[in-house]
Image 1: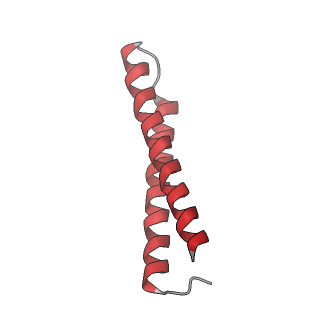
Image 2 (image 1 turned 180 degrees about the horizontal axis):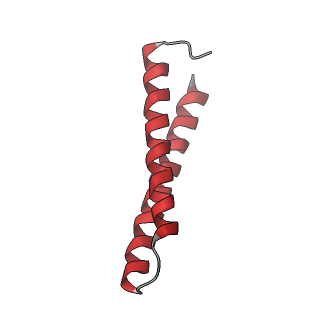
Image 3 (image 1 turned 90 degrees about the vertical axis):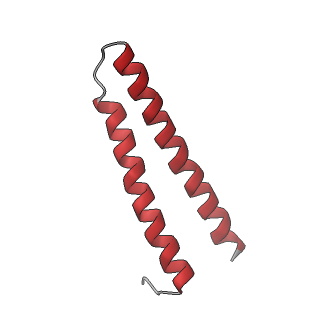
Length: 67
């Protein structure tokens, strides 16, 4: 069980880092009048990862068998 908790913590850290990098890139790109599309892709990817992670945590905590 400790392995799942460790992987979950690492996953949430990665999601937070990707989101923060995306937000920082949006701010920098908009300040320099550059396209923000790559930064928006990072933010969208982090939101998708967030939704998947929440679903996985709900399945694990609820005892639902996904397989």
